[in-house]
Amino acid sequence: MGHALIFRFTSDGVLAAPPHCGLLTVPDLLRQVLSWCAMRASPLVVDLSEAEALDSAALTTLVWAQRYCLSQGVPLAVVEPSAGALQREQLATLRQLVPLYGDLTSAQAAAPRPSMHRASAVLAV
Image 1 (cartoon, rainbow, N blue to C red):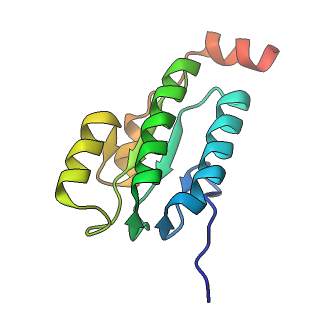
Image 2 (cartoon, rainbow, N blue to C red):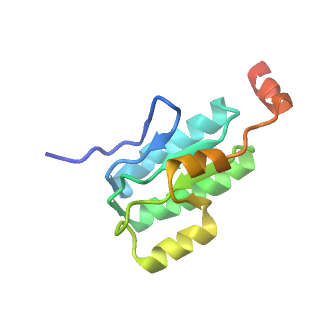
């Protein structure tokens, strides 16, 4: 049986990664980030904790997502992938480029909430 190839939003608004994040999952991740930034005033939390493998395409897309979210004024917080999903050097590089957190609770707490003024402006559009 094949692995899920989509990122999905959980009931608490967290974008959860599939077990294998690679080239086939990139279009879905791009779509989810673009959609979230276009419609939300709240931070985007991406949970990689269930990801067993991430390839270079997925890593590059996460770096792009960080930059895009910043350009849109949407904070991004990412939960680190499971142990062994990345080589040590890859994880160190990702930590330098993307805000990574050890668990979901830390990522949700670290993602600052927008001010009421900004949230009102987004809702008024």
